[in-house]
View 1: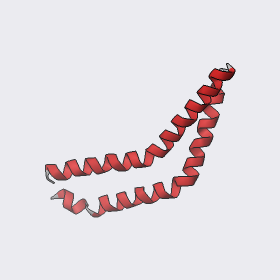
View 2: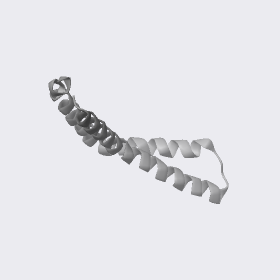
View 3: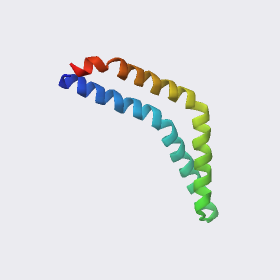
View 4: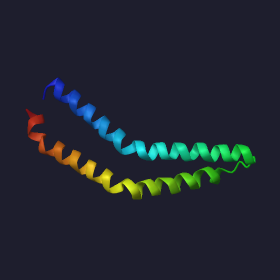
Length: 89
């Protein structure tokens, strides 16, 4: 396994990780900002008011994009395991 292969494998792993986590993280960030603005305007500072909408948004995005995420993970894993003999050289 050459240095180029290791670097390419690491880069591809990071790209897949970002692709799979970014929709959930951005949704949680946006929901958190909106809830924080609402809390600042209404001056209600309750911890559950930020937690519950984030969890609901997480499950909504997971239900919406879960099959796409799973397909990408399976494709990456199959590619990785299929190229395992090439990595051993």
